[in-house]
Figure 1 (tube, one colour):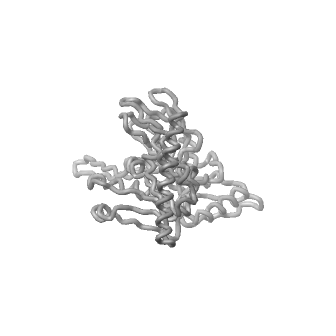
Figure 2: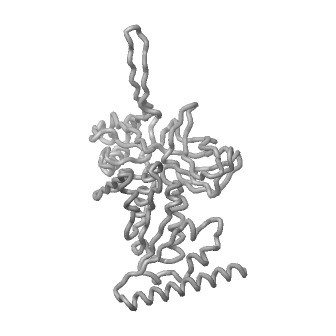
Figure 3: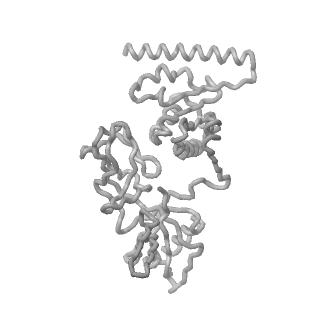
Length: 353
């Protein structure tokens, strides 16, 4: 208690000194705007949970400054999306600045050989935009120019054309599931074959039409097709033959890595799972269950603490398959007065990772 009180006094002193600086600036330039920049991996360090009393003091709460600026590039470049989301939420709750009064700094790539980190930085920027922040910054200009980063912003629609909703109808017994590969086979004059596999993972096609029978089913299907603009937007589908993974090994600890991708294994082959069912993911480290994890976008699991070197990280979960309608049109015939028949409703898996 005494140590926490000391941290609180230090925080109060920091808040008072910055308030004096802001007041002096406003006195000299009444129209100026004041900004508070907080580097979250430091001020919200999980190894020092009480340090925020000093480094993110309550005296900085709105409206002490005009704009709260948040930065977390260590988390971003490490792929720790769970910490980024939790940190932004914690800073917002502690200081009370609405998203519209926040700026976000998505970070930069220090070394040219790490330029692949730009993808994570851009994803973090898009997540901040989705939170509704005032401005998002990608920096710094020398690194952006060095690596030739091009950021394409779609003004008409979201970057990801996917609706996180389930196909509205249960698949009937007649539904068809067809895993497909892309393989080029060349046959020599002597009859020997050379096979080149273009895809590391199968892409599954579905036909859910044969199971659609009632007039209510047809109406729901047509409405769902219109809402997705045909094949323009993806959605979730529960594969009737492959929807559960039990004790799948998703990684091996090295004492540093905290984020692991969910996978479904088929012998030596593996399939990335990007749409786990909320609330079904269970994680174990060397067979010991743990609740200290978060599931982020694209089926990425981030543990609160990095597993020790050599520890097996396993996951049990239910999952859906991201799919879209395979064609721009959907044909329905009225077979009887009260029932419809849909001869074919082709869907195709969407590769997200």
